[in-house]
Amino acid sequence: MVFLPDESRGLPPPPIANRNSVWLGLVGWASALVDNAFNRRPVIRAGVHRQVLYATVGWCVGYYISKRADYIHAKLDRDLMEYMRQHPEDFKEKATFTKTCQSSRGENCLFRVFLHFPAESDIKRV
Image 1: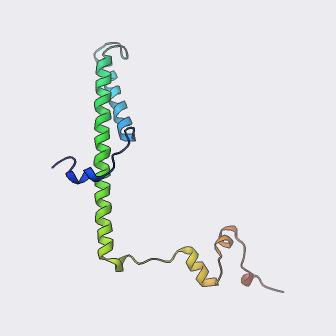
Image 2 (image 1 turned 30 degrees about the vertical axis):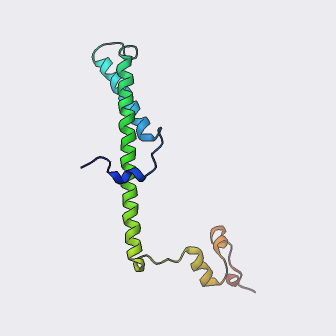
Image 3 (image 1 turned 135 degrees about the vertical axis):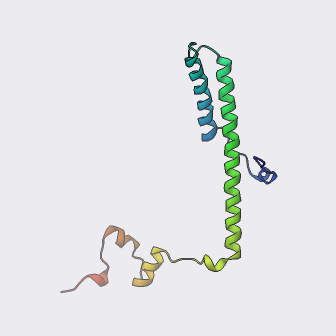
């Protein structure tokens, strides 16, 4: 299985600083710090080149994970839209609350429902 098929080239690239890149970049940097701590070296000052390398690798892995996720979601959207196009009888427009309320009273009662104002037809005259 190919990580990113040729179809994915048609998609726009994700932003460079996305949540996966930032998260995995920080995880890579933290793993270098933990490695320094386990080997009893100064945590931040030792192996700065390793810290930069781990953070860069994590950033790149996060970027390609975002690209893969975008491809999978676009493929799902394409398949669902194709199914909806082939079976329009399953996806008829449903009535909304506003349409139902308008049809039952003949007027727009959306604000009256939310503000608890009775309709004039509901008020009993003495």
